[in-house]
Image: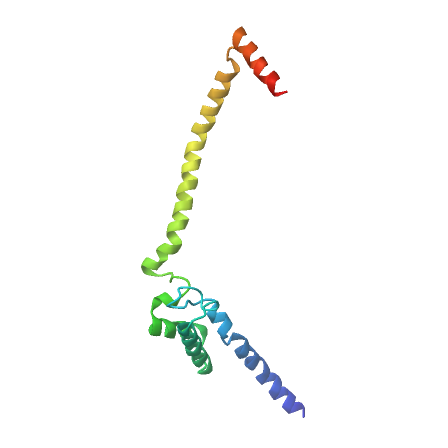
Length: 149
């Protein structure tokens, strides 16, 4: 009896680990697109989406892992089936261009900030020594403000 428990204990974790790493349809649906609807497969409602789901179920039944399923989907439907572009070649620009734009804008802000601050200080100094209103203008301003009270 003790030997049976020892054998089950040795066989238990790999079976559990295999079940945990086994891909599921909902997990893959979130990462791939319906090629006709151009929306994620988990929200697509079309015949093509149903065909893609059936294809994924068949691949899961065959025991393929997630990477192999995605490769098979790309082989069957083309790279448009993937929800995210690859990180190789020209597709990497989808990740690099936004990062470079943010860095360029941050650099531009850092370069222009001292100029803006000097300009604001100069305007504040010029405004502090501004001449008061002439007597007729001050009287007219007071009359206008009195109308709104």
